[in-house]
Figure 1 (spheres, rainbow, N blue to C red):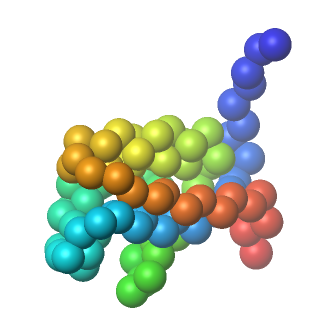
Figure 2 (tube, one colour):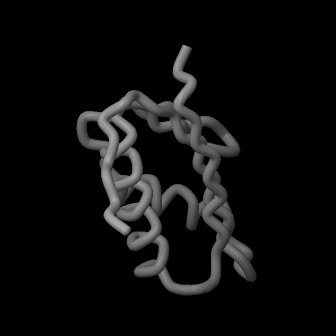
Length: 87
């Protein structure tokens, strides 16, 4: 099965939850400081962040964010909600 990427616009809500840590907020802030959304629009809120742009670029950035979270060490949840509805 071949995988095709779409340049159709999309929006992704991402929430990062580090587990078994006492400095939860610091871990989230460290991850956000390491992450660069590139050409995507990014809105950061108190509980989650939203990426908007071409869906293939969003998926690439989600993979990058996951990789950065793994490099931080420890267990985590990366909660992702993705839609192709952008209005």
